[in-house]
Image (cartoon, rainbow, N blue to C red):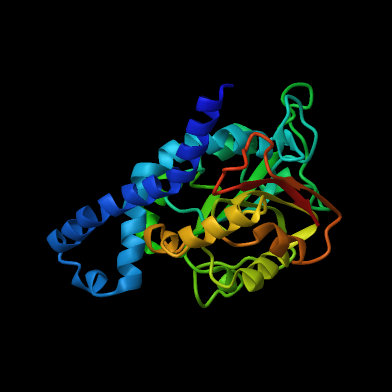
Length: 306
């Protein structure tokens, strides 16, 4: 690759977050006009509610493109075809199955993926007494069986879109919307259901831990829901560690970024927080090697096994 091309790629990479925020800013007037037409003045007068509505509208526009790009890593991850931050051709690790918590379900961007990467069966007998998910089609694709998905999404503006995604994927018997925060998953007084501690086979978090409140507390809380031997699949962006100047640039961007991206924070040490959430039997998590030094929003891909 020529010097010109390398310089061009680095420049575009460094400027890309500003473009991203610009697209988000362009959505705000449309959100305000929509709320005025619908006479939802209570949302307009609440900064936090307005930000939620704004981000919902932005994500409806931008989410599908992000899904296409990130899906190249997320699908293999959930199929057990990822190790050391890279995608592999054959399974090298655990695949998703059993009872699942999806953190930050949003508008349902990833809902249909569950039928792609696993069998789906609401019958509790799909699990053994020990909670280990039995395999089906052992002679062919060896997909695991998902028996239930708890989609955690406290933003009510996302629920209509999420419900449509569930119906479109045909997962009404399996996928349950949890309309509360992580701190209330086991509180039946806050929602029509309850998740028992130590009852979950897998947790999935895709580009969402950047915006949860009190990350250290809530990630430890989620850790408590995993069974022994359970898996936490992550594809998250994290703080830059490449150099002092990239860390400084990322911190500067983070002055503006959360206001345009629904409270998302660029500089979180999410991998470190996950590692410290509790004892892990195995950790296979790393930055994809395809990401270059000028990646302002670097990622971590992999699996934590309890």
